[in-house]
Each structure stands twice: as C-alpha cells, then as structure tokens.
Length: 382
Image (cartoon, rainbow, N blue to C red; front, side, top):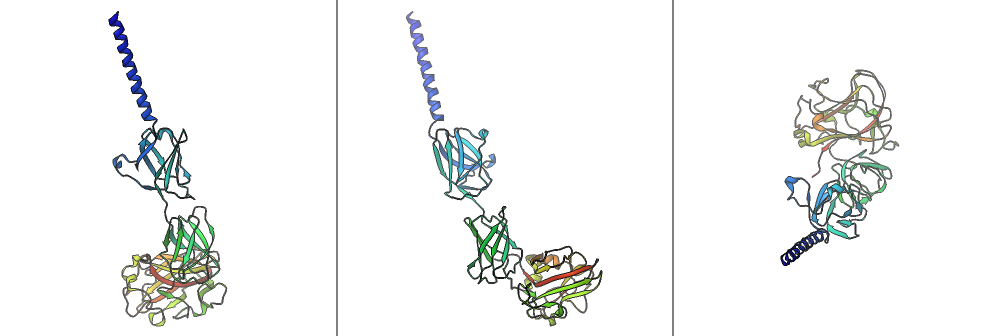
C-alpha cells in the first residue's frame, strides 16, 4: 500500500512538472513582441538585412511574439496583412504603394491586446523623374506641361533664374504636372522637387544651344517668304517659319535652310554630335494648325549642295501623320537615327554644316505648319 502511495505522488509530480513546462512555453509565445531585424524574402538572400524598402516591396519582419499582430503601418499608411504570412517569429508584409502625408520613418505593428511596437524603417519613395516637356518653349504667364513620374504633391518647379512657377495641376497618375511659367524664367534646366527629393531636367527650357535654324534673323537659301514675325500671336521664341498651301505628291517643295556659307548658324553643330550621334538628339518645335497627314518631310544636315547627296536615300524621313491640334510641341529624335543614312561627305566639317528641310514624298498635303528652333543637343546633362 505504501509503495502504491509513493507511485501516485511521483506521478503527480511528473504531471505538475509537465504543466509547468507547458505554462512556460505559453508564456514565451505570449511575451512582449519584439523586432530583431527586417530582411528581404528570398531564401537565398536571407542574410540581406534592410533599413528601408521601396513602395510595393515584400519584406520579412523577424522577431518574437508576433503571432497576434492585427495591423502594420508604414508612416501613416496601413499595409495589407495576410494571416497565413504571420507566425510567432516572422511577419511577411508588402510596403504600401500609397504616399504618406506624415513621414516618421517608422513601422508600427499593432496587436490584439492593443500593444504597439515601433521600429525604425524608411519607406524609400522615389524622387521625381523628369522626362520631357510637351513644349520646351512657353511664354511667360502661359502653361507648360512637364512629363515624367513620381510627381507627388506638393510639387515645386524651379526655373533657371531661381524663379518658381505656380502649379496648376498634377495628373492622377503623378506622371504629368502643369505649371505657369513665371516672369524671370531663363533658358536652362528646370528642377522638380517633392518631399522625397529634387531632380534636374536633362533638357533646357527655352533651349538656346546648338541652334541650326532660328529665324532670328533668317539666313539661308530657302524659306525667307515663310518667316513670320515675333509679334504674331503664335510666336513662342521670336520669329518662326510657317508653310501653308497644297503640296502635291512627289512635288519638290523646299521649306527652310541653306548651304553652310549661307547660314549664320552653320558652325553650331558640335563635333561630338558628329562623332557620337548616339549621345545627341535632334529637336525642333512644331505646330500643326492643320494635320501633317500626307507627303513626307526630309531633313539633311551637312553637305546639302554640290556634289549632291542622294536625295532619295540619304536624308532622314520624318513621316506623317503628326498632329499637335494647333499647339506647339517639341519633337525629339535620336540623332543617330537622323544621320543613319548620311554618306556623302558626312563627318566633321571645319567649313560648317548646311541644313535642308523640304517636302518630297507620296500623298498630297494641305499644309499649315509652323516650325522653329532646329537644334542638336546632348541627351544627358552631366
């Protein structure tokens, strides 16, 4: 009997010990939540720790006692939680794509019992990308349109000359911003700024570099009768060229330009543009008051007269259709595409460069087209 009593006492002790161990395990699972570190989710890169991440990136928060998490916030933006991605030691979550208004560079985890855990973590939001302007020439007081990405309000646009423009609107996808051009804006880069950084454009507003056709004043062999005064309401940068009338199929119609000894701008093409055309752009402003929907515009730079190039195969063909609907737009063409078929005496020319722009192609055209500021400029500004 005594031996049975001793056995029962031993069994009770073992049971109590098991209960104690079980209780300790529960306590470890329900202790104070902590974050040890944050890493990327690829298993092969599990040692890649993070102090910040970009919008939409999936991250793993590693710690202890995380299983009761019910909310995760990055700055003031709540993330979407997936219960199957939550364990006691890890939490997988995607950084919100919405832009925070209040930025504290913290991730906050809220638990069932109301406890909140803060951890230093930066949401790396892109600074603005500035790609282009619809027109690089806009008069003071009128509206310029800048295109790019990550134009998150509030946006500031600063022009060369140190003046800022009034923001008129920002597109819903943050890829376009309209700004009123301020007095004092000068030729040069623009700077677009948000709360997340600033970016300078790789183009010039009112670009005055390397101009080959300007009309201020007109020089050349062709197109003097097409020059329109700077006082015309359409003018955006002094005088401009405007061609009107019916152009017949394959009718040779010279528009503007001249041989190098007739152009005051003949030495404005940089040697580097000739040697490395892939690094440059041909640009001009155009306004189609009637659609450019037929015929063909040919562009030749370099030797434009005697001995002549092959006018059917060498020029660059700027093909229809193109319609700006009565508004000025900047056209940008990779310069290596423009010169791809130039063969007759093409190369660095100490004597300068002729320019010829003319119509010659299939289809008739009822033309009413304004044109200005033919130039060759670098793609990238260091």
